[in-house]
Length: 172
Image 1 (cartoon, one colour):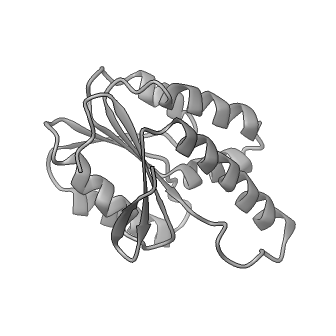
Image 2 (tube, helix red, strand yellow):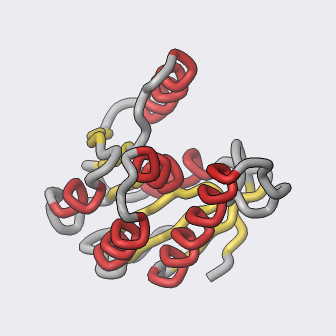
Image 3 (cartoon, rainbow, N blue to C red):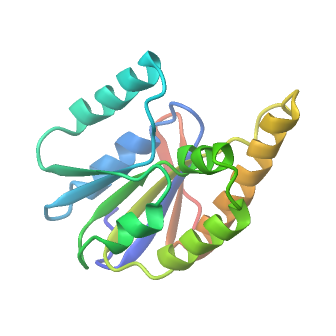
């Protein structure tokens, strides 16, 4: 499945469902250069290892842009028609929550930009609302905010894929 030249594909799924790998595979069917917009921040050794694993898996031909907070600015700085992969929205949301930013304003701003793709764009996010109710207020707030963010992204996306055990299921 290859996106049209100006479209948004939203890829959502649980942890280790194959979201990032599938998004990378879709992107590499398109002409280079491929841009990976990373939202993760390496606060500890385990996260540094995860980031290194993602980078090594991608290999040659990728430009990586770090955008833990200013995702809209990172997207705006890229040329039209450039294939991009944003990975991932739940880490971006976490960064904004920790910075105590206005989550509604930030997610609306992002949805407005993603609703008008200037190239083949792929966005990865975690589905966190299908598990048990978290036992603390912060985790419950995160789950709720992630659910609202994911709904906004799905609404503006041309295609929505749900990853389940490494298999993409077309939802929209």
